Every structure is written in structure tokens, then in C-alpha cells.
Length: 462
Image (tube, rainbow, N blue to C red; front, side, top):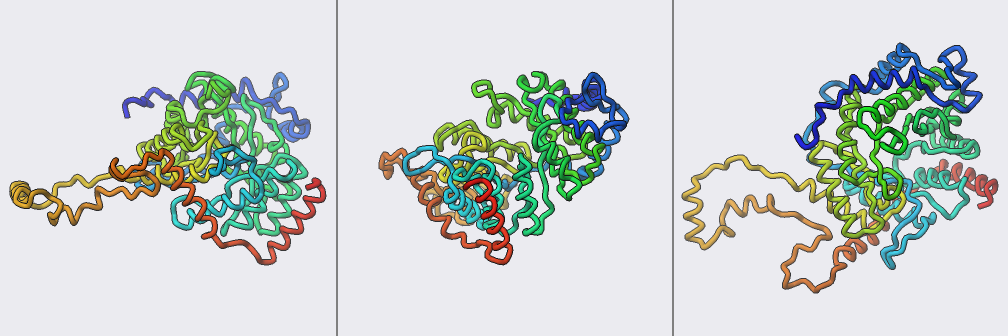
């Protein structure tokens, strides 16, 4: 695509600059315990931990070996089917009854999770929970979110967002009941700060069997990273490979991959822009940079939008996201059913997003020549007064059918003038689906989890 010219993105130069940043700028490491672990392993200059070039190259090669794919798996291929993923972090939801944004209660999260899981069993979205309950004390919210994942997902896994020692203790107990290896995702602070609760917890608990599930800086161009593609990506690689190096030099063996992501800004909100056109360029450059480490990029955050309601703006952002995912070969699309990034869940929007997915998947055609003489075919159409009864039409009409679930395809004369028809259809579908999902874990693991939740409620005053 010549309107996105990636030929000038010099990843070798970006990596060379990243190595210079790790060596000459280094990381702020405020935790004294971490500094003690690094003593004699990585140099400390001007109060910052630096990574020598040969060490950076060693761990870059390790990332390629551990997390890289075969060359054929890096080839960008056409995408016929999209896989939608919703966020499990929504703290609010839009009530279709009155259009108001409300806090996600435990009952709300359960209902919306059953909606997602019912649709997942139909193959239209990946299975996931739908949010974080807000009707419990702050320290319990992620604990309850993990509890609901274990109860309602047929194949749950560990919950990686852990921000306090008190939470960690409960996650370890719950994972032991479920037979999971505990994991914590680490969020490195930009620019170049090896700091934060998740980082400290990962180092404190790694010798107790807790795995670092990912290294995930979130640099934003012009905000926490330079407003230049080469410089911003150099900082991004320095943060990803540098943080991975520090973990490994601290003795952490069980490691997930660095995310290697760069984001563009939403200046109006001083946050990340996921739905703007510049994010598409961020995704394309992300793919090229990750390929330098033999890592594929099969997904994109193209449904995490700035819309706050299931309205026309959401329709533009979401449909564009699905079409762009197909155009650029990104089979995984994140943010289904979400509004204002991953903060608000909308049952209506989830149904509309599935419609957008089906619309994008429907952009295909078999244009290969068919057997038969065009003169004979057209003459037969003239004799018949048209082509509706032609064998060719009866054989091929399904190629021109889009079975819309909520979009109104009727002629104007049958329209009642109701501009909310689509939302009403989406509401009805979303209201009906949760009752169709019946799975809930009831074995001895449930008893163990219930005891842990009761203990947490007592400790945190829920």
C-alpha cells in the first residue's frame, strides 16, 4: 500500500539507536532491592542502570529464540475471518434502558460475561469475561474478576494484572486451587523507568513460582516518547529489551515476551489513540519492528475506540477497524463491545461490532470467468424479461446476500421512520443471549475459591 510507505523505516538503525540508549542513558531503578540484585551484573552510571551493547544483543537474540516464529509464519496473508476479542477490564457499562453509563456491579459483569460466552459458543467472539466488578473494595476488584473468570469460563487461565502484595497473596491461593502457574504482567513506565508495583511484585515473587507473563511498556509519541517514528521506536525497543534484560539479570527465568508496541496520542484527552488513522501506521510499523525479532503481529487494537456511546461515531470507528484488519492481515481485533477504549462495556455495541465483523468478512468475490457464452445468456435474459429465473442466478444468488442481523435492508416504503431500529434489535439480541449460557463451575475447586473470596471479603471489609 503506497499510502503507507514503510520502506524508509530503518529497523536496523532503530535497533542500533536502542542499544545506544540502553548503554548511555539507561534505566531509572528506584527499588533498592532491585539495585542490590543487579550489583556487579549491570553498570550503574549517574544513578541509572545501563545495559552494555553485548548484553543487549545477547538478550535480543534470546528473545528471537524464545518467542520468534518460523519465517513462513511471518508472511502477511489475506484474512478471510476475523477473531473478535473483548476487554475484561471494563469498569462501567451503558444501560440500553436509559442510555446512562453505570458502574459495573458483580451482577452486571456476570450477565455481560454470559452474553460474551454465549456468543463465543456460536463462534463470533473469543471467550472472555466482560469487566471488573466495582461494588467491592478496590483491593478486591481484580480478585473478584479472576474469581468470575474461573467460575464461568470453561478454560480459564491466570489473571496477570496484580498491583499489590495483598492481591498477590490471594491470586497465588486461587491459582493453586485452579492448578495454574501464577503470573504477573509487568507494565514498564515510559520513558526508561524500571519501576512500578507490578515490576516490584514480579521480582519479589518470582522465586515463589510466579512467572512474568509479559514485559509491556506503553510509550506514547509526543507524550512519553519522542514525536518521531525512528526515535520513538528506538526508545520503545530500549524499554522492551532493556527491561527484559534487567529481569533476566535479576535471576528471573520464567518470562513471557516483550510486547514491543508504540502508540500515538489522543491530544484532546491526553491519552492513547487506538481508533485514529495514525494508529494504523503504528500497527504497520509495529509489525515491521517485531519482524526484526522474528515475532509475528497477528492482532490489532482496532476496536478500542474513543466513542462513549453506541452511536454513529462508534459505527464509523468500529467498522473502519474491522475493514482495516482485513486489509492489513490482522486476524485478531481487540476491543469488541467496548467504548472509550477498555473502560465501558455496551451490550448493544457488542452485537453491532459482530455485524461490523460480518460486513468486513463479506468483502470478497469470485471474479474468475465462468463457463458459457455471454451472447446466449443475455439473449435468454431478453426472452425471459430479465435474469431472476435464470439458472445462473439461482445458483449464485447467495454470493450477493449479506445476512445482516441488526442493519435494516428493507425498502424505504416499509420503513416506519424509527431511527433507533438497529439499537432495539441489538438490545433484544443482547438481552436474550445470557440465558443461553449455562456453564458454571461447581466442583470442589468452587468450594476452595469460595473460601478464599470469603477470607478476602473479611480482610478488605466487603
